[in-house]
Image (tube, rainbow over all chains, first blue to last red; front, top):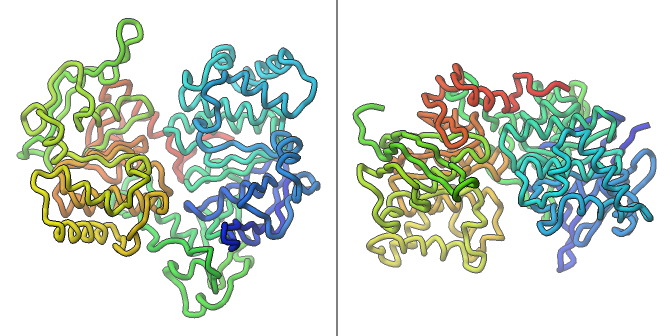
Length: 323
Length: 261
């Protein structure tokens, strides 16, 4: 049985004028134990909205339209935020947020923050017990435990802060971890050590599978088993890392690959090509392929016929002309 | 690059913060020259001193000791310095005031110039600058900073540079907040700026891949020192310093082994 399933999930934002803006439409995927799914896409394509949907956490103006999210067979849709926070977040699905600066309270020590988190999930545990568990976990992930636990966030470096956030959010042994650009605010060397730590946790069985969200395709190539490329609220291409990165079929994935930079001989002459134009405005109903306006190989009927997912070369692609 | 005048010259430059035991040497006795119309990248991890160096170039921090010359003379006053040296920062949202329209803020940047152009000319120059960064002027008419996307705002910062036409541009991580597509876009505009305005660009980044793509010369920094410098090909293909090698290895590259899973 898949450990995490998202079934035809559609989400919308409700504006104060009562209009529905569909941010995510018809997203489906499932994950097995030990699998890492990468989600790529440019800013504003609905990656972070999808994350909120995957946690079952709907805080206005975000609302579910249709679809289901199941963790180990159990649906987490249609619950109140209070119930989700108490019983789902942290235990079943945990989130590693983007900037550790915004997730840590500057006026509290790391250990107090972690103690609060555990106490809000489990009744009747005393502080000593929590601290012991915390020490054990921080030792396991190779941190300078005593110094870090007694420090205020401002005394730690950005990389250590991010590691603390990861340590605290996985403290209750969640089944699925959703990492939303966990390293985008860090430099390359710190990024590497943080990613190593995340995989260390996965290997040691602290959590069993992970959704990794980033716009850096080179990074995804190293961390993900499968990659889903997202565009304007829909998956454009879903396949194994090998298929999507080295043999991409959807015009959008190809364009993303073209915008990549790397320090290799000959790269200096090869200009990275930016994709012209901007993603469509989702507040207006879209007819036809969502990428048609910017697609370099669009045909006249692309703008009129809605595209559906189909199998091309062993992976799913949302393009009628992809080969 | 020979036979060109040097824009920046630094000798024995040191910049420290704090006193006694807690003293931090942000810039530690470094020397370099940056030639006219050259693109130089400062590359290094967090806290290596690259942003402090940028602030010294902008006269926002006064170095503790050593000499720092702009066009052969020490920097006298900030306002006249800023007419010729302008920055592009990492986070465009913290560079613009939330309470004023973007257009009025772009126009207010004429305030740094010695002689303000006429109102009509100001409007024209703003329009030209917007078109140069591929934004149609009506698109941002009456818009406030929070109404635009990160990529659009970053282009507004570049539009400011088109308006002021400085001689030197200090770009401090201009692409670290935007996604890969927008990054390629921003880099294109930077190159266009360089071509049109004949600027010297100091590009600051922690991504050596990016630095390789844009620059004529690379400075690799570590703990306040420049540990290696040379052309992009020299530095990336035959790195001599251990820190350069670490920086290169830590970049996730699609064709290289990165972490073992």
